Image: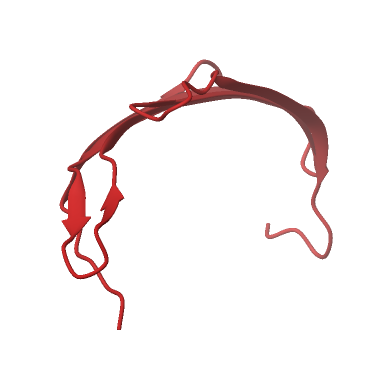
Length: 103
């Protein structure tokens, strides 16, 4: 059977801030590092790598049911061959609450 154990170290941080009664912002980041592992039975090698990820979010409440949000993301994997480019993304949307609202 083919199997391996790969040690990974990771850390993540997040920050949330209420800007006003109707506005919120949050930022989170993560970093992980995995060591290279070798399978001697089949001479298979799994390279170690480092991963960095950042995410943000801004939201604004318009009323009891409706809010707007924007979420940018960034991710990068280091230590791969060939070298990978970073991933970027941006999501924007409208959120609508359904059902009876608590009073």
